[in-house]
Image 1 (cartoon, rainbow, N blue to C red):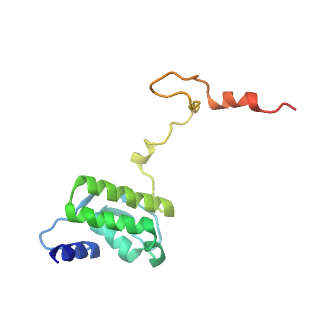
Image 2: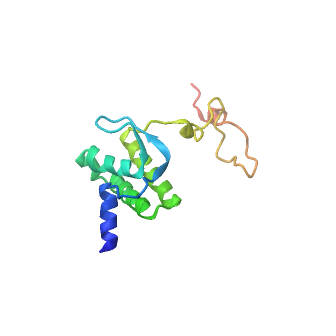
Image 3: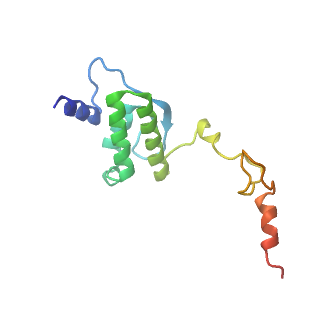
Length: 143
């Protein structure tokens, strides 16, 4: 019974006296009408899902999963749970087209100006080294 009361209090986003708000690993910036511009804590993210998100969206599996991960992160306070919840919220926001990319996202994108190498090349062994554009040329039909 005690466990359910804590989970429901965390699910509603209620602040208990003496409890600090759990910060997300990184601030999540978003642009959506009727929603706050940034999520900094687990309670803010839960409040956004529960009250600011349209009802038809909050019932989707991606948002229900994000909410359950946030509740688990609020319950345990573990860094691993906070990271998983933050990633799922970011993924759900990205699926809706509401996520604003920041500097940490840019480092994961492929660098511009470098040709994409053929699939046989990997980091452990040497591949053919030809770019895909050069490799595709012999397969084009001549007129």
